[in-house]
Length: 122
Image (cartoon, rainbow, N blue to C red; front, side):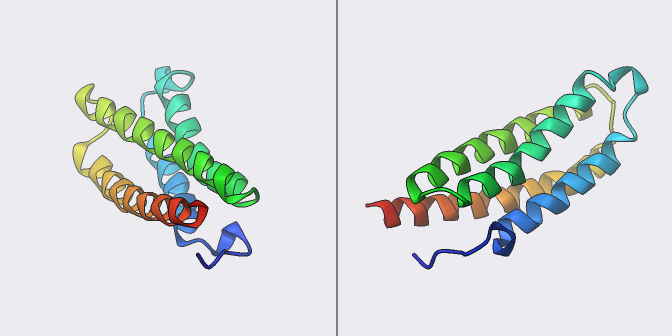
């Protein structure tokens, strides 16, 4: 596997950073009563994705794979929380669907990166 020299060169990290920005903008629409509840959880899950990609890339391949799996978990957590916001009528489905589309794209990229790392390890 052609190892990337810097996490900032990874397209999945770049897209994850954009996702965080979108999430922060989206959560401004949520009820203020949720500021320390679901809104906070959503932001933490979103931030965890590029953070774990960055931390993992700075480590050995086997550890990088571990951090990619954590990022995948955070991505699923974020997806679940956003779907809950739709269900609870906290956010408009049309607005959330744009971010859910980004999540699908990032999921695919993380899956591909995970597979490449597994091949490099074996």
